[in-house]
Amino acid sequence: MGWISRPRARWRAATGLVATALLGALSVTALGTAPASADAITGHGRNIEHKEADGVTYKDWLGSYKVGGKDVFCVSFHLKAPDSDEEYQPGQDLLTKWGKPLEPDIAGNISYLLLRYGTTSNDDEAAALAHLLHSWTAPTQTPGDTDFGTPPNKAAYPEDKYFKLLTPEAAKDVATMKAEAKANRGPWTASVTAPKGDQHIGQPATWTVTVKNSEGKGIPDVPVKLTATDGTIGQADKQSDTEKASDSSSGNSAPQAAQKDTTLKTEANGTVTVKVTPTGYQPKLVASLSAPADKPKVQNPVKTTDGIQSVVGTGGEKQLTAQGMVAVTKPGKVQVTKTDAKTGKGIGGATLRVTGKDRKTAATSQDGKPLTGPDGQPAVVTTSGDNGTATVENLLAPQEVCVVEVNAPPGYTNAFDPNNPPAACGSLAPGGTLALTVANTPNEVPHAIPAGDLPVTMAKGTVETSFSTGGIAGLAALVLVGSALVGFAARRSARR
Image 1 (cartoon, one colour):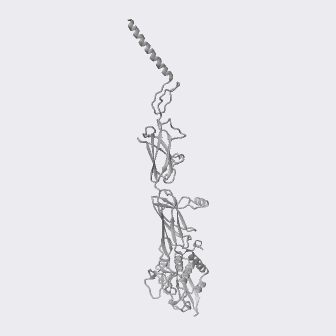
Image 2 (cartoon, rainbow, N blue to C red):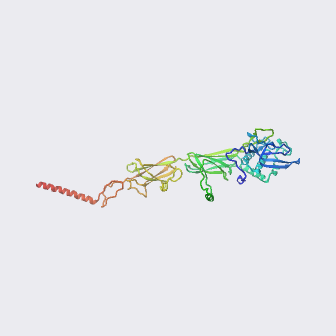
Image 3 (tube, rainbow, N blue to C red):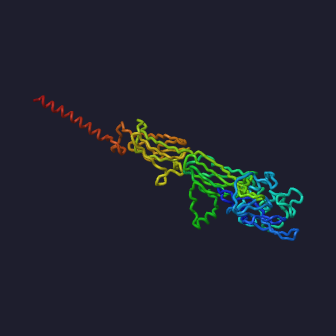
């Protein structure tokens, strides 16, 4: 059974220290030995009552103690518990009561249970944890080492006897903890998977953190602290339509605010999924979590006396970190040049739309949004200056970009076809500049005099002259009359 179905248990914060997750202890007044320290203060757990051969009923404590204001669990079995004023400091790897190294699986079980239940406030869980830890660290070695009256330094933990004296709830917890420890003991692994494909500034993409146990299975409900560099974190939207409707009705429809770090728990498959929005060119996501240590470490009370129990001050915890990084694709820009098709000179005042490959939809800006104008259509740029240029920056790259003429500038209207306007297209590379040139054919002045009585209509903004055929005939008649008059004047002068 996984711990998701156990609401009584509590995880410590993923970034917290685990000095409070200490080994389970038993303070005994049984077996004819001296009682535990009078100054010892019990924490969470259960008293185990049993009658011995001398006819006396004894109470043995299975659970945690308060030491220095913290809940601690102690070793070794049947020895004096530390008092509340004693301190502890880092020491050696945890050994059995008999000075032998723990089997790797046992060490892994202990580390996991300390991490998982070391700070429990549930009395049955604390008693179950103490029972298991003593069973593993003080197992029987010789016949009779669990008998009443055995010296404290030679007494083994009477596992079967004490298990039968646990409450039914604690007995169930023992079985559950064994199964959990076997399924989830370390070493754990953590990994961060960055999104495939290009990432762009301002455009969120999905990142995944995975936590697995020693058998490669995902571990659920593990707190993972996430920290983003050159980016912000927002939780991935995995809500069902019903959940979204519920949130909307309760006023929770606003998206999660972007943040640099957050702590989330792994899902049933051992993953955490988030959206990371790059704010720089090298976004990185770091995941850190508490995992079971390979070996729990012993700490000995500073004010030690003969026979006092040691404690495991670092608990079963070690820190795991994993990270992922991607290189954000840099934006590109388009430089448009409008030229005269005959002279090659630049033309100012030309208007062109910036579109995608289809020449209809808008090009895409770096944030992944369409580059549109106030009318919702692809944005329009106007060329200017002697070179007839315009520049569009911060475009998503790579992408295919086209510039399509909207209206011809004055003096270039005759060759303009609104159904097939001049255009130019190209591929925009990351961090590059795509140079696109659109040429216009200028209006031409007619070389032949057109037929008909009406003058030819010329393009607005041009200065041209036209004549009709009737005007040409009248001009010829005037020329002939003038010649006749000249001849007539000459004859009159001769007669005189």
